[in-house]
Image 1: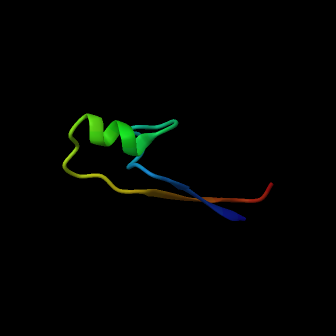
Image 2: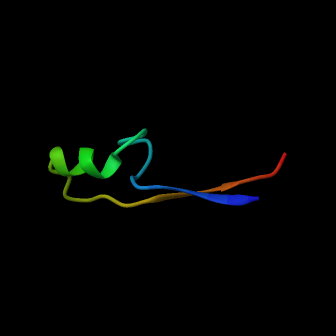
Length: 40
């Protein structure tokens, strides 16, 4: 398997540029989501 890292606390700011969206919207708390992707 592998790890996938997304730079927001999903589902908030899913998609591209989550850090920019968090900054523009004044989020006081943010984080990362780490997902383990299983092989087929």
